[in-house]
Length: 343
Image 1 (cartoon, rainbow, N blue to C red):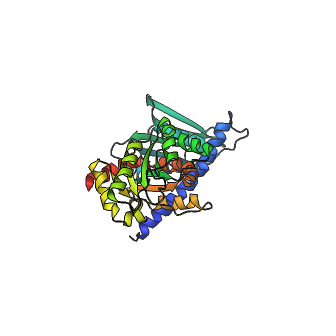
Image 2 (cartoon, rainbow, N blue to C red; image 1 turned 90 degrees about the vertical axis):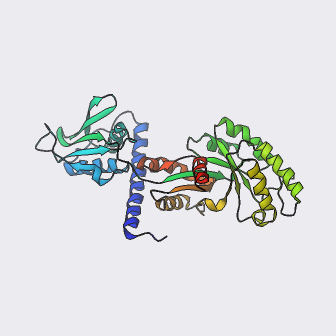
Image 3 (cartoon, rainbow, N blue to C red; image 1 turned 120 degrees about the vertical axis):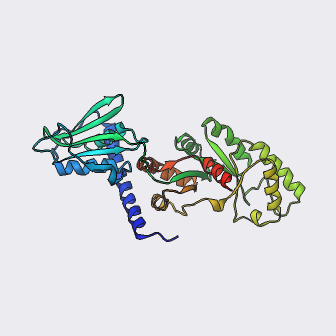
């Protein structure tokens, strides 16, 4: 569907925000590597502080309407540039906003004074530079506010079973995803490691199943297909769901309807790969392809992205920045269950 000009403008703005987030992450890294701030830090003007103040809020997906200029009681000064009333959605801890500002102001002579009204709730923020108050803001939680961004989940295929270091890196990532296993002896061997890492998986049925115990050839009889299916279901019994490659000969064969019936009898959810998005990337443009994909996600979308292990390890570093804006990243099973309930 063609996007209207207003929506395109919003996508461009979001892309710019992602770039700002990456810059902010660099600042965070610097902070983690240093115990003290730089010496001889420069003071900032009111307009410079105001700009970074708004950047911090935009980094968390705040709408302009949530940030309102307002006179605050007992707040005044010749150098005061602006005062604000800021409405905060419940899913954003105010303390995280303060930390974001500290990160952005780390290289400069800016003091952040936050007054607490109760445990972990900051109601008044003062930004001081050159010993002069430049900006103040009141923060108030508003239960009706929501950061409206889409929902994304990951399926990760083509796991490098011959590279233990990469597998360990993949299994240890804290991000939410399901691995995709093609039935094989090697896949079976990796089930314990995956379970110990508290990861789940889905099983992919396609033409790449070569081992006789699991093979589902389009030339096999139904009895032979059934034997392979029973073996697959027995070995990979803990799979979240099964996937079939709609571009495979298996999907086009007369045996597919039989396979579908047998899996349904066993209460196994079978999903076609055409229900998933892909990046279609190469080693040089993975990150940019992922950013393009994220810009295509509407606020009401719930998309499952099928990526290779190499693609996933490249883009996983970008996920925290998008989550910070307000995108939600969940397990693919949660989306599949919801879709099944609606069908």
